[in-house]
Image 1 (cartoon, rainbow, N blue to C red):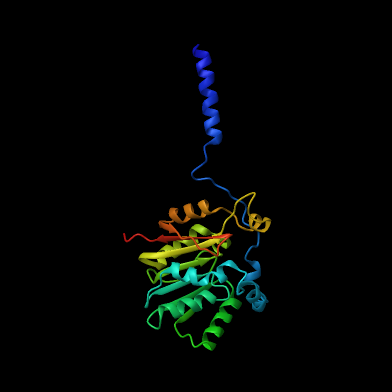
Image 2: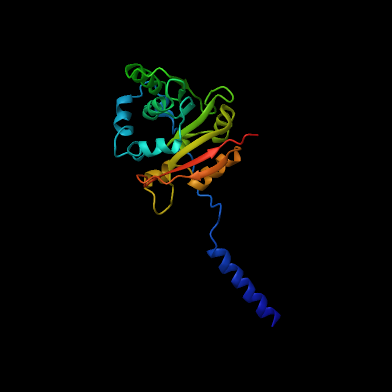
Length: 237
């Protein structure tokens, strides 16, 4: 009788363990080798990327009004656009924060930064500075910004914990971090995303929390099908 009971309990535990979903499921892939080489290339063709980044068919471009609203920018704030690319969000931030605020367009691609600076001058935007970041740092002074914005670039971070540490240092106490990236769901996501994005939303979320940030919420964006938007905050103390 005891033997039969023990066998039954073993079978039951096995069934439960197989069907119980993992709260912190880790879906990870290897970071593609040389993922950032093309951006550091001095021959980078910015016009080619403008045609890919600043088109309505790109989710984060088509949803820019909703994303800007989710950032909750107040006049006079200082904002770091990390992985600024062609700078379309940097320009929106510069207008939203006004002349009393400032925007730092951070990127590892010198050609992108040159384009951003040239476009800002042409548009009469004077409250914007370009910053050449590195693989481990956004290179901003401690407690210098109110908001850090990372859009479709966190999965490009080659040293995420070191980069997050530099972001944490740069944010003022109670400062905000907005993270937008691609959902990576085996069996659902496109093959390109499965091979290009190294981890799922839960893994990225946990990495940011491990760096000292508090998760505020996830903001639903109607235009998003492949992307998600998470908001974090740096604790006051």
